[in-house]
Image (cartoon, rainbow, N blue to C red):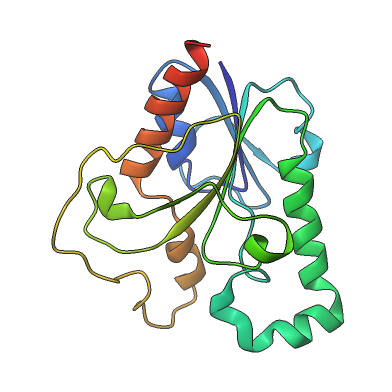
Length: 189
């Protein structure tokens, strides 16, 4: 199976699919943090290359409700509409199976509601971080390892130059669930 991971610099989701024997390519404007198949550039350069599945992580900077106090300025400057247009482009890509993830955001009100809301603690991590999934021809994820001791560690991160990168990382347990469950689903169609 050919899997495109849009807007991923960490390689976490890419490597979860690769571990199952799939051809997986991550794509981001940033270089990858881990060696592997990675296209550093615009996702639109590779989006039409015959993918079976795309998992997209569009930047939430202009979308997430955590920045709602800045929405008026973002709307006036046009950056919020550009971010929403990018989300629409990803969701409308000519790929049969698509998952798009983002935190609580205006995607829900301006485009459509998500099909699922997941938490890291469903997949073996003690953190809380509600993540929305917009799905096209994919089933919702099933929890694999529900844990207790839940903490809002991601939400409580202090200011730092890399805070945005740390907050946007996909947890390995979620990446493994995506790879295992969605590749099994697609292969059994």
